[in-house]
Length: 110
Image 1 (tube, rainbow, N blue to C red):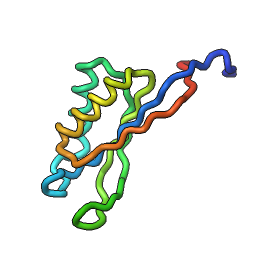
Image 2: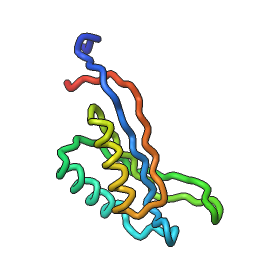
Image 3: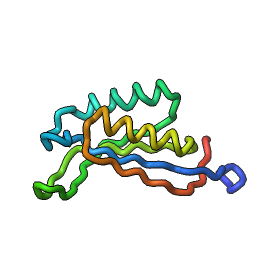
Image 4: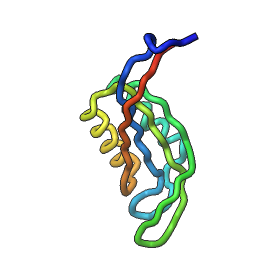
């Protein structure tokens, strides 16, 4: 059984990235290609991460759309590194915008 003494305090970052190209509003990269891009960047920077593929929706200047969306979860990394990761993913995937959230968490490796 886990107790509070095992848990550490940290920061959890989540980066939400849509896969539609910002110029064509089409999904030019499939989920596997986006995963490959993320994996290469994180391996290069030695950033531990979890990746979830999901559906997202949003409004833009041409109306409302849905798209494949990637959610990258990183715990305990430097905030500046997370911003750089988000900016690089935005550029590599050529998406219009990304969302980064930051939360206090308690975590344990068991």
